[in-house]
Image (cartoon, rainbow, N blue to C red; front, top):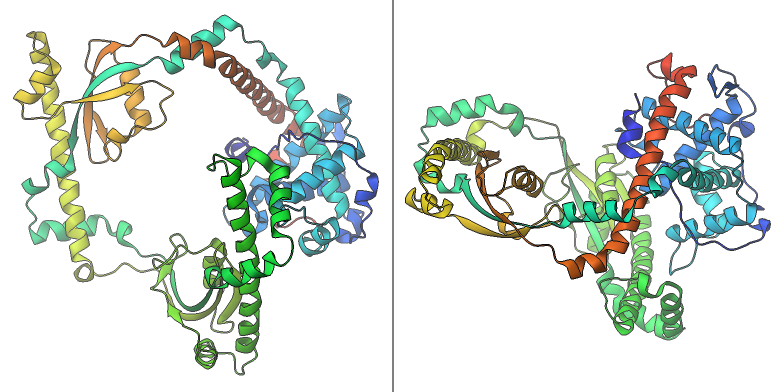
Length: 556
């Protein structure tokens, strides 16, 4: 039933180190949504034998919205992939967890809640500072009809869920040293393996490409050649690099060095993990502060330009180029691009792509759009609807696709046929390598591989690593696997031997591994309980009575 819950697991488990803070933090004037949720009716069902009130349902709904916002930076009703049913499932799961936490007497103090909230507001702030609560309420919450009280409830309940998870997942804590050692050995036991790959690239020259066959291939794969809706825009980019020198001078006149030291003292080794020394980290902090100031300056200039463009009457896309010419700015034009891939000329931020696809003939201008390295002002150039291009316009691409498709089939036939030759050769006492060489193939000795191996450059583009590992560890030592198909052909592996465990590495890594295993088991135990409990307790709710409910925005 709870497909969305299993897919996303929105239940936030907050593990923050918190200290006492005054309750005054929450004393911020704020609007209430729909008059505080006191009106309205509706039969929402019951959980644990208790009737769900409209106020409780709306409160959980607002918390689900906040949860989604802090995990994605957006609101769920703006995402077409989040259905009304998905949201209702999350609301009811949250109501169930709140009730369970209350029944178990889990209590989170106001001071703990406020401190955790400040930590979360750091993710929205700048220069290492938390976004002020009143700014958060005014700019983030109020436009969505949410309040400081909703935020407080969201934080309090998520902290309670963390305690609930630890309590209900307690069974996962019981992992004996012997069990941890056995699991460690399964994960880190390495195999010595030889492999032979059958890749389409080796068979391309064997493929004939008659025009009739290419045309038939195009007809059979029309959906693959359909172009999505696209848009083309002209834009001005106010790049941060053009403002960095001025930004550095400006910051140097204030307290840039102090800001660097304060930021480093606050975050220490947790900031810029790729930097290895304190001096390297401080240098990166300095760069980030300068970039932040440069972006602010770029945005200021972009605002001035946008105001000049938007003030022109009538509103037309051409106004962007006209004002740019007056100010000596360069106008660039993208090639048509899709919502999924964005412009090919540069890596555009998500909000650039979103703004481009929101442009219309009535509203052909947008901006400033702030990216990580530049600020943009856009104008609509053209919109192109989804279409399947004629074969003549993409014949070269279709021909390449046909050639690769046929070469892949040839590679798979070769691999399947080789299995019989290999079986007979090994039965006659020949080695894996000698049978491969006799067949004109190139056997490869792969680096030692364990289930914990996360990357293997030697097979990149030729096999999926997880599929390769699954094949290896399901093949007995001294035996060969069956032929395994891949996207461009396939492979066969020969498991030579099981390598000795590195006891020194095992002794050093086992304590941390055991702790992670207990954490994993605890989480698994909690989610097992949660899925069972949700399917049992939520039968008394409207989820089991209605397929969906209109409206994807929080209740008003």
